[in-house]
Image (cartoon, rainbow, N blue to C red; front, side, top):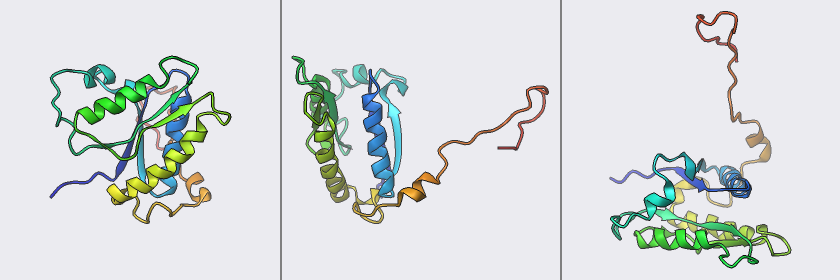
Amino acid sequence: MEMKSKTLLILYATQTGNALDVAERIAREAERRACTVVIRSTDDYDAVFWRFLLQRNLGSHWLEGIHYAVFGLGDSGYQKYNFVAKKLDKRLSDLGATAVVERGLGDDQHPSGYEAALDTWLSSLWSRLNETKPHFFPKGPDFLVSNEELIGLPKVQVTYHNVDDMDSRLSTAT
């Protein structure tokens, strides 16, 4: 029996912080659909993510069974517009992974910014993810948890320690 992960992994790489903003938006929208999400920077991996994927010894079936989606942020004013997103999409496909949706390419030159492409891409993503991985959305992709419920969920826990007594056990006050 194949184990199916119920967690959506969102990887991002950013220089300006925009990709983190997009990753967090995708995570919020997934959480509103009752999907469990983990966000990670590609910098968090022991191996340098890009170098690792470009190794020549990885076979064409290395990522077989893996489903992915790519959304790139770029500026069509540059010659290599969304080059990394295009290259990543091709490499994942070459390694045997299956695209859930066609890659999305956000363009800062668009009058509405990269959000114009992101909105359409996300709509397709939720629909196609529900078709290929329905266990992500136990109540369907159109079910939305209310914002009030999500706001009430703690994201962090704070634990206070007595700095005067460094040898004391951790305080249970949170």
